[in-house]
Image 1 (spheres, rainbow, N blue to C red):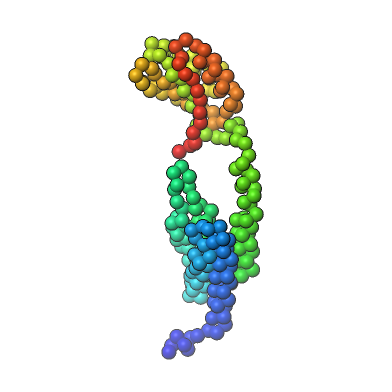
Image 2: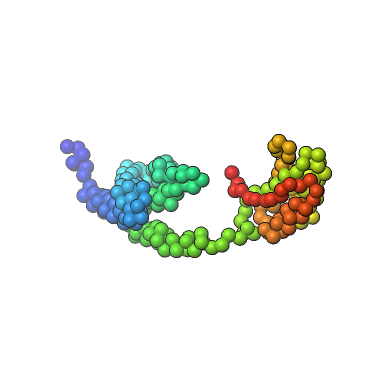
Length: 237
C-alpha cells in the first residue's frame, strides 16, 4: 500500500519513455546484426539497451545523478563481459569483435535513454548503424588492396641454412650484409638440424623494403657453404 501511495505518475511516464526509446533503438541496432547473421542479434541488443536503461533510470531515481553515474561505470564493465561471450577464436582468426562492440554501444544507447536523453540516444544509434553499414565498403576496399611490405609493421627474420664448418664465418657475414643494407640485427639464433645449421637473424627494423632483403638473401646464397637463404615476417605476439 505504501508503494502505491508513493507512486509518481510523472516519474513513471519518464521511465516508460526511457524503456521505449531504449528497446526500440536497441532493436534497430540489433536488426542490422540479425540481418548479417551474427551471434548477437535483434533481441540481444534490445535487451542490453533496455537493461542499461532500467539500471540508470532506477539509480537516478534513488540517488540522483550521482547514482546514475555510479551505475554507468558498472554497466560499462559488465557489458564488456557479455560482449566477450560473442568473441570466437577460429584458428588464427578472431571473430565477433564488431558484434561485441555493437553490444557495448547498445548499452550506452540504453544509458542515454535511462538518463532522460532520448535525442542523444537516437543520435548514437544512428552513428552505430552508420559505422556497421557505411564503413563496410571502406573495410572491403582496404582488405582487397595489394599488400605493401613497407607499410606493414611486424617482426622480420632472415634465415640462413649453412654447413656446420662455416657457421661462425657465415654468421658474421650475415650480420655484416644486413647492416650494410641498413638493417641492424636485434638478435640471432642457431638451430642445428642433422648436417646443417640454420641461422635466424631477427631484425631491429619493424618495416622493410622487400627488394632490399631479396638482394641480401640472393647475395648470401651465392656464398660457399650457404645452402639456402630466405626472409619472412611474423606479427607481434
